[in-house]
Image 1 (cartoon, rainbow, N blue to C red):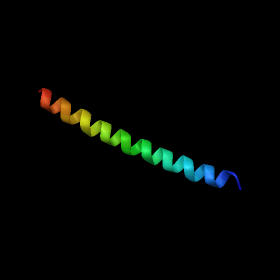
Image 2 (cartoon, rainbow, N blue to C red):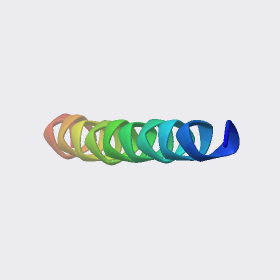
Image 3 (cartoon, rainbow, N blue to C red):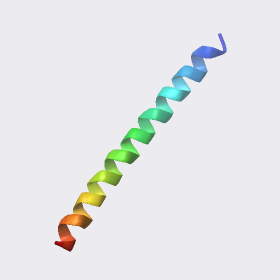
Image 4 (cartoon, rainbow, N blue to C red):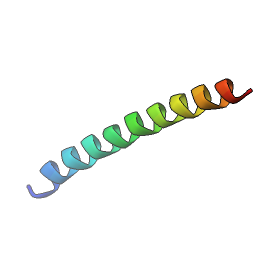
Length: 36
């Protein structure tokens, strides 16, 4: 029973990291395009 909440917590953490990575890539691309 202890594994279920941990699994949902891990899922939410990976989802948050995914969103941060996507935002980081978008910001990086915007900065790279402005520098050129």
